[in-house]
Image (cartoon, rainbow, N blue to C red):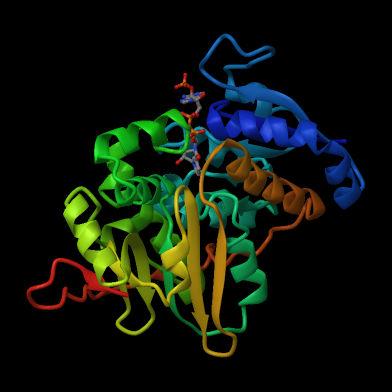
Length: 339
Ligand SMILES: NC(=O)c1ccc[n+]([C@@H]2O[C@H](COP(=O)([O-])OP(=O)(O)OC[C@H]3O[C@@H](n4cnc5c(N)ncnc54)[C@H](OP(=O)(O)O)[C@@H]3O)[C@@H](O)[C@H]2O)c1
């Protein structure tokens, strides 16, 4: 039996418990063992068996893996630190923490023969980071262009269908895939964190979210969307990393029909990765939501369970800051960049 704990029993954390209980047979088949949620840590009182003291969890020798699905920097950072120092692997969906402290936390994990994995922090349910880590390790990745924020894509898709910005945002929030603070979505900060993590992973240099040239979708009008459509294009909020420069930009782009990203609608995410040997590879799937995101967290739990007592190398523990990042300007006189 693999005993785990969940830190933060909100949308994603409760999804982790659901995935584990609904797919126990599949997990057992993969792992040859059962995964059991021994502890749930949350501030709420109305969760059966909830604990509030982190020490109850990190002092229990049965616990070898925790899922950090609280979000935010604190206390997620302190709790993650405490767990890793005890040799407990941490699987997280918290992109803010990965961007800000992922390097340090990965180094602590390596020092204590455990792992810090963050598959769910980028692309929700899409198996993106593990695939890049395992199947692209020998590739020189020249470019990544991704629709990485389900809320923005949902809003832009619904604006194209005639809905106004505010009601599309409210629907996204009601469906549980918008961030608590919608500014993080619509101003592009969430996408910036995700493309910074991807750029770091493929380049072996640490890009931070502050280095991303970032513009959100609040300036996009229904007229802009109609004009784009008349030219055979769609407006999508993209995160774009270019190895040359290097540059990392988040902005609304005009995406031509010929691009597979054109057809990525609603809450779906799409990520195009260009390697020097493999050429273009397209990833597509649900970029947010309770069960898809939880599915990615559980995939990390399974990887940690298979590698108990070992550090899973993600490249983040040794990574050095990237230094200067360029910010290519928009074409003269145009409101949008073109993909
Ligand atoms: N939702 C998605 O689709 C999605 C997708 C990808 C990644 N993520 C990321 O996953 C993380 C969690 O997101 P979420 O949507 O699941 O958030 P959420 O629904 O707000 O869940 C967070 C949970 O953590 C609890 N919590 C907050 N502070 C705590 C503390 N000090 N001690 C114990 N528990 C605490 C919250 O309790 P209260 O409710 O009482 O505050 C809540 O139950 C975030 O980093 C987010 O960016 C989410």
